[in-house]
Length: 411
Image (cartoon, rainbow, N blue to C red; front, side):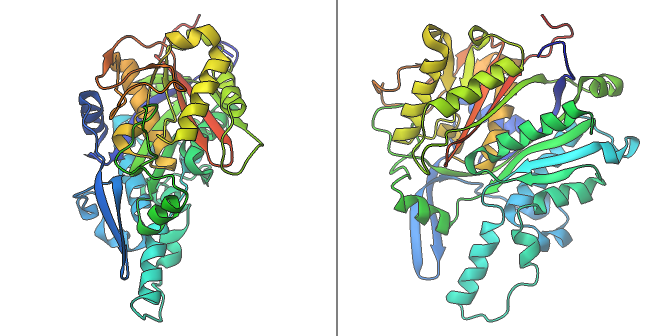
């Protein structure tokens, strides 16, 4: 609660998104309502699939990373390292001047090195190869992104990966907050990374009837499903004392975290778990429910998710729900699984700084089961004092972050 424990602040941010490299480019496109979803073809042997997706179109890893290291890095790990490098630079974090044992790296990912796995499967089953790429284990393990950041910057404190599907990035950030509050570390690089817009993942979600036929239109009538995305959102967070001692730029305060499970169904979400996680995040920050004025929704664009998330918001906030602006940046960037938590928190921080809520794109009109104050079509200029960033994973695993502008004195 406010005033009774270590405060955690955000001092740096880095992004790799379907728009390209960098937080400035990401925010410029979000603010302007320029979505990144396009028809995307993926192949495996003689098989092919074309679906809407949000991917990096002209990405060249060698422009950003040492080419000698790329043999060991799946694209998701490349995205993570590029975003981490930007976040560390923007935080003015001189690691060589700090105690590296008191710096951590905690990242979330769902698919990990699935791109490398799929390439190798194609070599075996379609090209007749008999020898495996000797770098495959390094490329496919989920912790490779964390290891890459640790080795690049000489970080020797707690470094690990969180794998909880669509909530992985947000869960990772929550774990990072707990590490900082515990006193085990002073600074942490955290967020999520993903390169999941591949043939096998597209076909798997197609089989579930979960992929959109045209585009992602959260909370809209005639929405048809989610759209896959990719990228990385990485933040530097630290204790307030650390940031002040370093003279670091303080971008926002990570005020509260909430985590819960539905304990109900393998694929069908329920409202009580998300509502519980939102309540926990608000109360963990020492706020009242009526203090929340913006929610960056999980907002995948599927029929079930949007309906249940709406119900969770209404159940928790009651009459105040009509005063909460809601938007879904997956309508811009697609669903990048573990990366979405980091990218959406970055969007929330920029919203706090700029007083601008990005619009939910592709809106066709209201759905009676999704009656919210939905910011759609055009961005909304309005001050935001407490924002929630929601992530809800298949299996009913929920994680929510509460973020606020930094104030020297609380209360």
